[in-house]
Length: 202
Image (cartoon, rainbow, N blue to C red; front, side, top):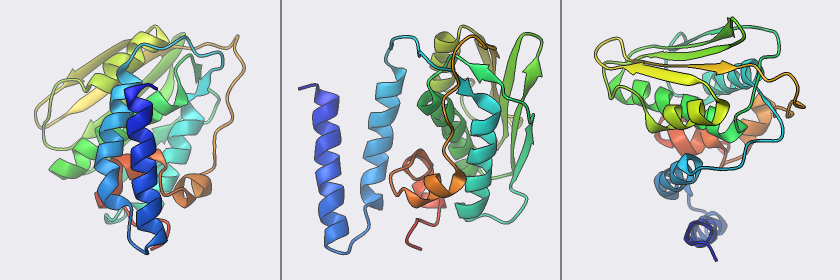
């Protein structure tokens, strides 16, 4: 069995025991986050369906406004309404955004998520916080997978941005609703932002 699968099974068993005994599974989420990042950074076959970047961003931002313990206005979203399909795994795209927002929440300040058509592709950008590394690894991996480019900047105006070509020839994967994300205690939102969120049972 793959070591990552073994570790994921072990974490799942530990989480199940904690939940059955009336305890929170939150202490296990940092390990699950590290495992998820390691898996997403590995090369993978090209996705057979496209991810709707704009729909994913809208659902994520709606869910985050409902669960992150911050004053209203901490997250601003400028997201185009039309379908913007890219050849990137939805899990990788969402993880890249959430990882960036985690850096903003850790360092303080407001965050901006922008998603819009730019030429023959999609411009995806997250800004905010008070400095950080130039470009998180998940953004580099996302750009590689989608056949695009990614850039980042450190300092007071930290930002990560990616341009990904639109891929309209592939079927578009269904996007879960924000209620579905908030109801799953192991959704990517809680895996990446557990310490900043009110969980589904709170």
